[in-house]
Length: 299
Image (cartoon, rainbow, N blue to C red):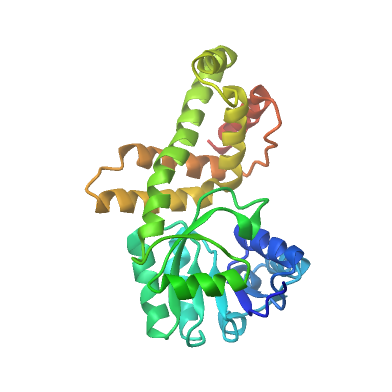
């Protein structure tokens, strides 16, 4: 069934694109609009590339947040974690009364609570959403958690637009807390992977280390898992570092020192800054060589 819900995006990176494409392909939303700060970048090539990205997904590109959200029933905010509260503050004044603001950014619960203020003051409904798996290729069907004050009303309206997160409570920040604490492990393992296998490669024992880990664990082999982790970090390390800073805030809010998380932030940021485009199917040894070359070039 085609939805008549008017839907807008604030931010159109990987998540915005994936969600827009799957909603469009499923016939669940039409007339989508999007604003991304890159549309007004001082570099005309960056601005043009973002406009082409948005329009290529069948979405109308808007030069201002106001143009994107003022007629929207549902707004999906997918900016970087460090910009989530700022984006809500800028766009909230233009929201329709009773609009739903879906904050899908990977933020600390305190950041989500801060972002909810201007949205609620505008008469709109803030929904804390946590994306719990890679957004590509499932887009809007990716497993998500959500928290909102009136869960029944919000769930019904989201269902009409083809969105079906699992609600975990009414307290803003609860869904985010689950995501943040999960990220301690998921991103921490990525960071440990880089630390371990860079050293193993330099010592000439990367294959032996991978084999020894395989012997003690089932499932995906460690060489394959490491190659996957490397690709994730080089592709999304900057965004993930921003997320992990929010994780650190979450841990401190729980009186837990973010010792390992601090190291994860450093590795995610360093890997993301390399500018590499790795194929997860590339053999681990080749990936490690490319990474070492890029790191040496940056020193």
